Length: 384
Image (cartoon, rainbow, N blue to C red):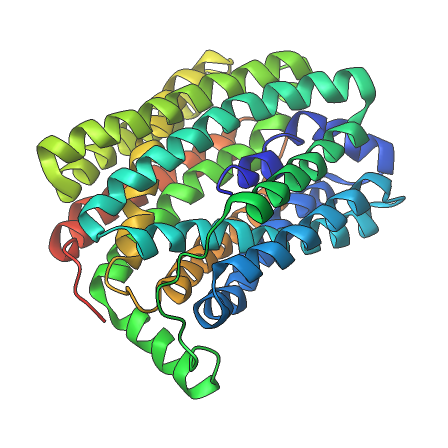
């Protein structure tokens, strides 16, 4: 379920320049195929989270994955960039069911102390899928065209739906019949948003995802159009980055045993700041090369593999009775950041590496500040 996100966002990135040419789209329009998807992904979770608290995770997963497959097929046959963006928007909303429920299930089944380690293991699996997504997208789009790269998520979604139908057992111990009542929903959101532990970990996940999305949204244009890499070479760059993310999820579990959540996150903040600062300073000094981006990105991706499992499990830890709503709010804010980044990049990409490098520098600094201040002060769950 978690792996459906990199399949949807990463796999088609090598095909993005060819997609733009094929549909006669501008760079800003092409960026909308990613940023609109992620905005819909975030907004839909605000509804899907309470729905899953009310009716259970299983029905939300079944309907959501079915809609995902249909929308993914629609992207393959879309005749214009406008219809492609519309189909990707629906696909993003449906993707919210899979990812939100996956995060909430961890809270359904595990205590907060165990949840971070379990989430880290789950995100190791996501890391393996992310490692394969961009290289596979480069190969598929190179051999069969960019539309074939959009077909792969439909196949992945259909397989995932089959697994949920045949294997998934409802994880909500006690459904909340009041979860969808407007008054109850507003009070639940208010309790979550006022909880300092949620705020601390939500800030961390937003900064960490801002780092990742800046790279995802800008990298295909930078590496292929500015630095001259082929689709296959770009896929290998993404594979390299995903390996570091995967390594981060393993390092996360090791550090959690020895340093706890706050100590682990503090160390990850240092990695994010170091990588972002190095990338920004190299770009500022006029060093333009593949390695000037790839090498500083390694500690950034390592930090992302640590911050996401800690942040996602930490943000829902105080809310055992409203894990769906808490997971949804955290997901919404992450995607809101991604949408803003996509809009900024769509207007600032200027044929240089500077927008990518400066964006990574900014969010690396934000991740370090969140890790060193808010999480250190409020990192222990305070139940809402």
